[in-house]
Figure 1 (cartoon, rainbow, N blue to C red):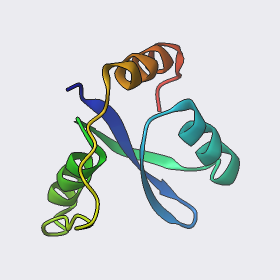
Figure 2 (cartoon, helix red, strand yellow; figure 1 turned 180 degrees about the horizontal axis):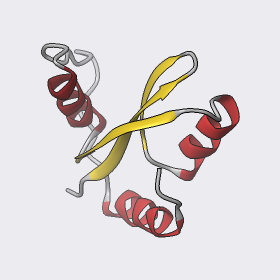
Figure 3 (tube, one colour; figure 1 turned 30 degrees about the vertical axis):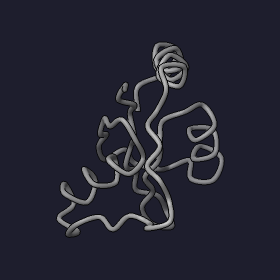
Length: 91
């Protein structure tokens, strides 16, 4: 199970945390062109990324949705993100 990069950004309207992708970067650039990169975390699932984010920000334990089963990222998703990161400008 591969780890994918998630990033935390400060925007004009608050804070945002998302999986790094071409789509999330394009959306942030369009909606918050002055966003400031804060940090990134690597994790094998969204839930584990949120746990690491909560630990780092000292928010207390991350509470998962009880009805949702944890979905781990695939090798295909990791390859897609790796290709994007190689072409991406640094945050």
